[in-house]
Image 1 (cartoon, rainbow, N blue to C red):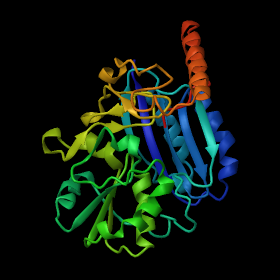
Image 2: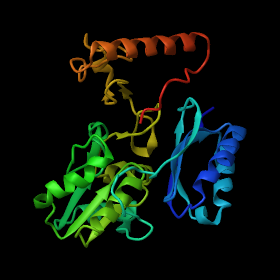
Image 3: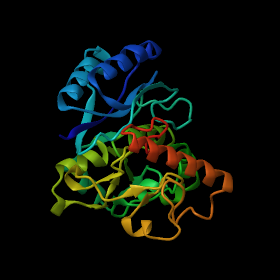
Length: 305
């Protein structure tokens, strides 16, 4: 048996988003769907997994709300359930930028389909920006893309202000995992003096799903926020694991290092961990292993996000 993994988001006005939490959580639990869904005034965002029928039923449940009727999602497969539980959360933003007044419901850049993406980013008049975080960019990005080297999306606006000299080409194109961050980033750019702004519709996931590998301008794997860690062309599962301490993807070769301690540290972060952190991470890993022996999911384990 394989599981359907659905990444979804939609910017829309959910004035009653607080009231939507309980029935949505209840429906997910009824269907056996697991993952995380975020609700905010500006819309919905999340990644969920379940049987094909369960995901289809949940999407139909969401789209029954007229405000979510145009909700789009990206599907991939997982050999094992990639989430440990279902969480429906209320947030100020469905993707946190932390800048007041940035609203894709009002102002947004031009959507570019995966079929037209290669032509756009091959244009010498285009500056290409990867809006994801450093640990995501680490394992793959589009050739020629600028890496803001951010640890969180909150840092993106400051990076733009500090690097305007690198963004002087006539057109700006941006991309992210599923489309949500670059869509919000395009709204920010439009409201801060950049006129010709584009973003990849459906994100990297839709590009890897639909574009032939031989024609691809993508280099590497794509980091995803679940237990698979990464996917490749065709959305096949990658071969990376993830360090719990620093969140960076790690290879099997790196796990052979004497500096790697499962659940505690890796060669990248081993000298940055305090003794208190090491003890906490080690205790957490012990609880995970004990839960596995009992055939249970360790509910204290966080999604890799």
